[in-house]
Structure formats: structure tokens, C-alpha cells
Amino acid sequence: MAKKITVRHESSHSDHSTEEVSEVKALEAVENDPQSSVEIEPHLDTVAVKNPFKRFGAWFWRKKVYTLPVTLLVIVAILLAIPVTRYAMTSWFWRESVTVMAKDAVNGKPVSEATVTIAGQTAKTNAKGIAKLASVPVGSQQLKIEKKYYSTQTSTITVPWFAGGKEFDTSVTATGRSVPVAITDRITGKAVEGVLISVKGDNNQARTDADGKATIILPADKSDMPATITADHYLSLDAKLVQSGPNQLQLVPSGKMYFLSKLSGKIDVVRTNFDGSDRRVVLAGTGTENDNTTSLLASTDWKFLALKSKRDASKPDVLTLITTSDDSHGTFDEGNADFTLVGWSGHQFIYSVIRNDAAYWQPKRVALKTLDADSQKVAIIEENASVGLSAADSFYESIDNPYIVGDQLTYTKRWWPANYYGSGSLPTDKQASINTVRPDGINKKVIKSFAQADTSIQASLYRPLETYYTVTPPGGAPTQYFELDQGQLKTVAKTDVETGAAYPTYLISPSATKTFWSEPRDGKNALLVGDKNGENGQQLATQSDFKAFGWLTDNYLLIQKGDSELYITTADQIKAGVAPLKISDYHKPLYGIQGYGSGYGGQ
Image 1: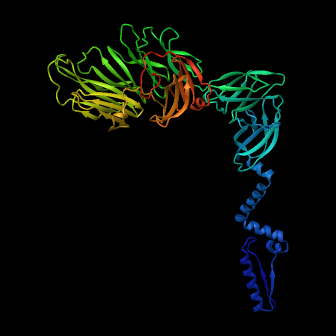
Image 2: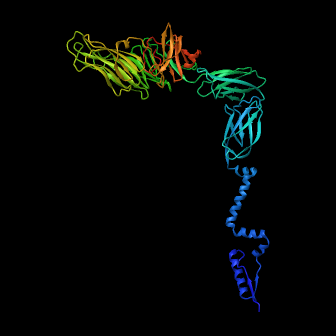
């Protein structure tokens, strides 16, 4: 009898390899029993053999752990490959920086101070017509550019992924009349970039480019309009812009200048802007000031001023420190004393004192002092010594020739008999000397000493870093000549030394890298700029009516005319013969200071 073998699938989701093994076993059974037959019971999977799509579907679901993520990725990739769906999917979280360049449709020049709007974000175009928006959604966006007297420009742009500041160039059409404006620095003559030109009462602005030029649009029916010109580090300027041009305007740098003035009838300390505007009295005179003793010295950065003046008719001169950051002031030394100003070294102010309440032969009558302007503390650098008990038998020390030489203070000392015909003798350990010390009183050194205590020493500061000394011992011994050059003392020949010559005062720049000075020539002056030691001089002008007064930063030069007028300029402008900018008339006291350290205003 025939045997029937039926092959059933245990599960519609059983593994295909299991299905194949079952069928093989069935065929083996038929071979062993030829009377047998095989019947495979139909099932979903076997039916799928006839429909490949259904079979694929069955396989897809069996492998869904893998097929579903892959399918999702494929769908996303397809959507991202299509620009419309790409940006729709990512614009809500993906943003890029965008640059917009606005130009005039007629002349192609940049349009500054225009308002650029993209996706609700706004920015103003700069002097180059460029506006930058830092976080714009990717995809299709509306770009709008607006400015008064220009037609509003609207366009559609596509902000791509990884735009990296992509620039969109646009043109806008003026509805008014284009008016050119050019701005330069009054002192240097150079173009000023970034100046804001604002038409008054019209909400219309423009900004200058790197060449100091801008184009502003005015109403066609207006021949001129008032405007305010402003820029960082410059004084604002009110001007009238005319359509016929050329509208070439000049700005004065902002800053303050301090000087003495007798305009009120008293000697006041006054400050003004560089063009003389906004004049204010910083310290009013009392009316007791003396032309022969009043002096004002400024530090090289103009942060501090040292004033010597007689503030009370019944008292001697006093020393006053003025701080220019807030114009505060206060006395830092006074008493029954005579003061001699030496000069500034940074923010250290050096001066000498003769105390009148001590006899000329007594110790500590003479002192060198230093004021630290930052801390407003005074320290004694050196005081004179004395030997003896009375004028009849005493010897006293003098402190002379103080000069600020670079970052050092140099001075000399010698001994004198209080009474030439008196008795007594000077101890042998007392000597004359040439000395140096830091302006703050530290690191005091004797550079050269001389056995004869009453040796005469004459000195001249002939360059900023070099001093001559003529040393004459008593008793007819030969005179010696020395040069202190940047801290090193060396013997020189007599022919190389002119201690009695009138050397110019070299005005050292704030950086201490340049010097400025004037020399009299045939009744007028030569103006020169040199290196830090006053050498390698470059002549700026000859036969000039001006003299050197100081520096204002390393860029500007201060000059004086007729001992009564202050001006500001630059080296290039002097060489070019351009008229300097007058600051103000001022009061120059009769008392002058030669070689006054690194300060300004002593001449």
C-alpha cells in the first residue's frame, strides 16, 4: 500500500534553512520507499514563491530589525537630496551667517547705513555697504533692504548649508539726489574711516569708507541740509551739506590740552580741546602768582601735571599735583622752602628743595626729592651733610647739577667751608663725587669720587643720554673732563667738552624712542626730530616762527609761537608746510627750565 508523507511548516516565520531540511528528509523517505508519495502542505511562505512582492514583504518583516532603519535612512537621504524638502526639514534648527552687500544701482558705490532684514533679523550696512547677519535659517528667505531716499528692495534668496558668510549682492535705487562727502583729520590730513554723517531732522545717515568718502542722499528739492558729523576719538562737528558739493570736511581728534593762561588777570591752569573749544579753568590762580617762579610741567603721557606757584602772598611757593583724568589737584610739598623743578621720569617727578629755616651750613638744608604721582607719596633721594657746630668751623655739602638721563637721575656733590677764614679742617674721608640713582630713589651709586672734597664740578646735559663734566681740583691741579654716556663715565679731551654751551632741550616722546627739539638759526628756528638720544636728526623746518613745546602721544607734535600761542601738528605736516592747528593763546612764565627730564612745558 502507498505511503503518503506530508511536510508541514511549523511556523510561517520559521527559518528558511529549517524548511529546506524537512523537505530533504521527505525526499529521502520516498527514495527508501518507492511506493510513498510526498505532499507539501500549502502555507503563506510557499504561496509567496508564486508572488515575489509578497515574498519580499515576508522577508522584509522577518528582517525588520535591520530593514526598517535602513529604509528610514534611505527616505531621509532622498528628502535631503531635494532642495525644497531639504531646507523645509532643517530650517527650524540649522542657521548660517550671511553677508549682504548693498550698492547704488546707478553708480555702483556702497550704500551705508541701510537696514537689511532677513527672516526677522536686521543689521545696518557699514561704510563698505556690508551687513552681516549671524544666525539666518537655511532655505528660501525674503531679503529686504531699506533706506531713506532709496526704493525698498525685496528679493528671495536661498541660504545654503555651510554658507560660511555667503555674500548676496544687491542693488538699490536712489529716489533723491546723491551728495558726496569727504572727511579728513584736521591735524594729520589723513582720511577718516567710519565717520557717521547724520542729516538733522531727517533720519538719513551715511558712513565714510577707508578713503574717508561717503555718499548721502538728500531730497531733490533741497539745495542744502544741516548735518552732524561724528566718529570715535574725534570731536563732533555741525556742518551744512550742499548738493553742489564738494562737502570736504575736517574733524579734530578728541583730547585735552593743559597750559597756563593769564586771560583772567591771574595765572590759571586751563584745559581745552585741541581746537581750543570747551575751555575750562582747572585750577584758578589766586592773584599772588609770580611770573618769575611759576612753572607747569606735564608728564609725557599728560596724565599728571606738576605746578610750582605762589598761592598765598604771605607764604613761599608750593608744589601742586594735578591729575588730568578727573582734574583733581592737591599740594604735595610746601613750607619755608625754595623749590627747583628737575622734571619727570615716567610718573616720578624730581625736584630739589632748599629749606630756609635751616642755616646754609647745616645738614639736611638741601634735598633731592621724588614724588610718585600714582601713589602721591614723596620720598627723599638725597640730603646734604655737614661737619661742625657753627658757621665759624663748619663744612657743608652741596647737591648740584641734577639731570634726568634716561632712566637715571645724575647729580654731583662737593664740600664747602662755612667760613673761608674760619678754623678747623675737613675730615679726609669727605669727597666730591658724581652720582646716579633711579628716579624712585633706589640703587644709589657713586660713579666717580675725587679725593679733594672741595673739587669744583660743572655739568651740562648736552643730549638726552649724555652729560659733560668739567672737574677742577683745588690748588691748581689739572682740570679733568668726563662724559657720562648712558651710565658709563669716560675721560674725554677738553676740546670735546663745552660745559658752558647752551644746548637745546630735547623733548622725549612718550615711548622714549624719539626726540623733538628746536635750534635758533638766523633769528628764527629749525625744528628737528631724532632718535632717543637726539642723534640722526631729521630737519622738519628751517627759518620757522615756531619752537618745540612737547609731544602728544608719539603721533602729534606741540609747538609754540611767539611765547604766547600753542599749536598741534605732525612731523609730516610740518615738512609739507601745512599750517598747524592752533590750540590757544597761553601764558609763558619768565622762569624757564632747561633739560627738564621727559616733561613738557618748561620752556
